[in-house]
Each structure stands twice: as C-alpha cells, then as structure tokens.
Picture 1: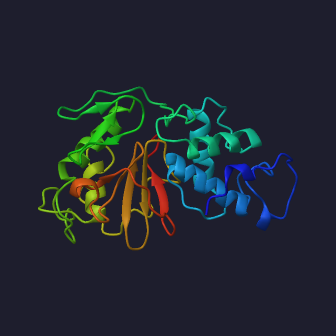
Picture 2: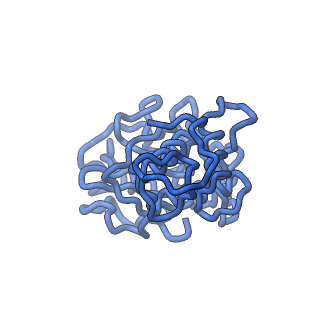
Length: 257
C-alpha cells in the first residue's frame, strides 16, 4: 500500500529497514525494505510499470533512471530525498495538472520513419486509440514504430492456443505468438519459439521494448504500452495502458532498445 506523501522524513538517518519510510534514507541498487516497496508503488502509479517487491533490483534502478531523465535530473538511479519527493509529487498529481512530470523516456536512437497507416502522437510514449489500436510515439526509432504497426495488425484478433507458432498468418494468436508477430519485422526471424522468451535478447528491461516471460505467460511493453493477451483489453485489443503485476516474470529486451 502506498505511503502518504506527508510521511517523508526530513532526516536522512538509518532507520530499521522494516519501518523505513520513503525519504528517510538514500535508496540505491541492492537495498530492501518498506521504503523500497513504497518507491516502487509510486513509480508504478506514475506510469513506470513496476511491481512492489521491496527489493531495489535492476528493473527498479532502470525506472528510477527513466523518471530522473523525464524530470530533467541526472539519471543516476539513486533516490535521494529530492528524487523521492519528485516521484511522490508526480504519482499523486491530478491528471493534467502542472504538478506532474511528463512521461518522456530518453531516446538514444533518432526518430525513425512511420510505417504507412500508423498514427503518431507527440513525445516518446505510445497511446491506445479509441479503436483499440496503438498510436506510435513520434520520437520513437523506426524499429519501435514497426513493432507497433505489426502489433496493430493482430491487436483485435481472438486468443488462440498455439496460434502463430506454425505460420505467421493465423486466425488468432496465443501470448507468445502475439509477441513474436509484433516483433517479426525487426527482432524475430520465424514463428513463435516453442520454449518461450526466457533467454531471448538481453536480461532486464529495455528503454523502448521489454518482453516479460514466465513459465505460463509472456507479454510485452512497447514505448509504455502493454501488448498482452490477458483479457484482450480496451475494445477487445491486446494493447492496454493499464499496468499488471509482474511478479514471477523475467524481463528481457533487444540490444540497444
């Protein structure tokens, strides 16, 4: 459960980990405690999709860096009192208010051309349109826009067990089939893998593309939007802006993305 913003302590002491409140101490990679769990909750509420594990792991550090870059701070991955206050302020600010920080992940690759038929929106975050398809961020590299274009082609097709494993063209797609189809133009050569995405790409979350794999499911986050067969979300679409628990999932990403 998120701690109230008013719970920030003025002193940077070293309280017992189990009772520490966000802001009571400087947080960095490798630490654990209630304050780390609160940090993760605020980051998730701010749109950075992160489970509350209480462990300051690699995924947490990456998202702290994303937030710092978005907020115009040095992306150190270390949460000082100033950073903690900024995260809480962003997470608790009313939508559209001046108190929030725009969610803009830094782009290390230059913006690329947009595939035909794909709508774009300003910035670095994709958006679900009213028809259930995704609009690609204008600042995204060409490879990311191509993934969104491919995802849109099957976004509203039904879930089908084994769909997409024997052929690119199918009447429906399962979770790994859906992920593979979306990646086919840039990062996959051939239909969905039999043994999933446990060892695909590089370990940890990516800047633009992250595949989350477990023993029973796989989904993907592209430019801030989740591409997932669970429930087929907005307008029967695989694209959704909502977050989900990532407990039990391993994050993998393509090199440079």
